[in-house]
Image 1 (cartoon, rainbow, N blue to C red):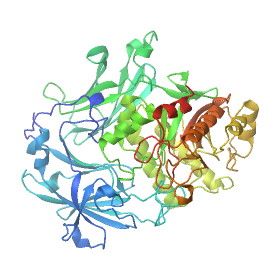
Image 2 (cartoon, rainbow, N blue to C red; image 1 turned 90 degrees about the vertical axis):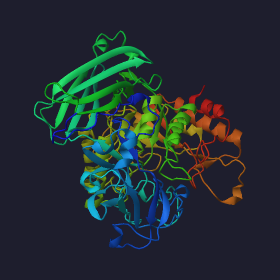
Image 3 (cartoon, helix red, strand yellow; image 1 turned 180 degrees about the horizontal axis):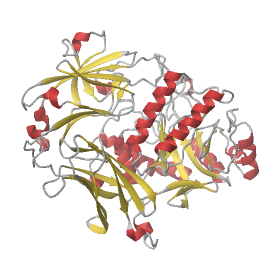
Length: 618
């Protein structure tokens, strides 16, 4: 294959099947064969801030990336304040040799899954680029910096700045106090998702975005990078299959006459509706469609670039007070998932842990997860796609209302929606929670305008999913009205959500937290109502009450009492004539919060069958 600059490039490496990967690839919906994982041992400094360190630094400690320095898994295990941290490691072009591209790769891209909060990057002292936003990925071209010698050793340096007291930063559940308090946890500073190198051709596919138009049509947006050759084309081939049996195949080729190309992928057999359920994605039947997008030259010749991807055919929406999945009412039975591990904090301890998290949620009887105040690792979303779990995508909140806080959160949230919009598992967007960052939204027109605009910009980026403007209370323009209610008595919960009269009373007045449910001129438009936080029952097997550690919104004295409380609260939800879904607090114990269904190590507090029976009523 000859590249655009006339040099001879290596053939494209073989592509894995995207729907059948092992969860190691950091960007699961856009796979290439040539990549190298840079996680592992790096040099680390968290004292001082010397500009000379951009070329590397002596007397450093080792840290295991991508675990944050506050966590035991990092090898640092220092949970105090870290306003500035430095990382360094050596890197060579030859690290890509094993992937099959070697030193013939035209362009080398350095990817960061997430660095909290502001990152600056150097190679051999040469400034490469920077990024702000602690939960979203960024990519830097390091081709020239790494030179042409495959054996030359280069020093990669990363400086991360994360002011622990700056509440204008989107921080989610990361505490701004030195020690965790109330519902906030240890901080996550610096690199906390995978760092990796990728080889791409000079003209390449830069990004993919899958959109479900309707039950029989999917649209793919292909963004091209580099110098687009005259007459180039984009070919998309999609294959529905059960094992090795083909159920349907589609292939479409369109001109690459712009840097952003739209490709319509029709599913002819879906039009008549007779076999629709054989192809659609649901939690019960999580069917994924394998696809390959190829950038072709004008006529003949080898492909310029190719990536493997997947999508799911499914639609979501709301109508008549219910949540719709593929046009049918679907009861959303969700659990609040903090995505926090005691040994590694916001970073998963392993890629296997991400799969196990999805499996455990399903084994407990849930059909959905509300990933709370965290933009989760894309590999979690891959397992949700593959194993069948609905996910609510939620923005990590800031805790101030100011022009800077608004700009930071909007920018980071737009990047998150763009990153994750292709995942069929994500069915709802939540850009704000419990009025965090808009504490006076009930009376402040500016904060109301911000909440409305955040919801609207989310709809502008993705009009295919419902948006919740402010989860829990004080909604301005939500497609789903959500309520947080930690009432501990099942009968009282049943009365609050009993019937249409109770619904009218709830939405027309103040909610369980003494907050109005609708503000800023918002009115009840018949939207679905969901109880998106409830439960939170503390149970610490073997612990003594006088120990004073851990808490929940109510407490159980033993396993039988705990299961009885869960059952009673769920019976209250099941008795409602109008609730369209619910979300139990929470999946696991998390630091001082001991109200999880599982211990922090993911073991169940009672046999998992008993929990499932309480949750499902079966």
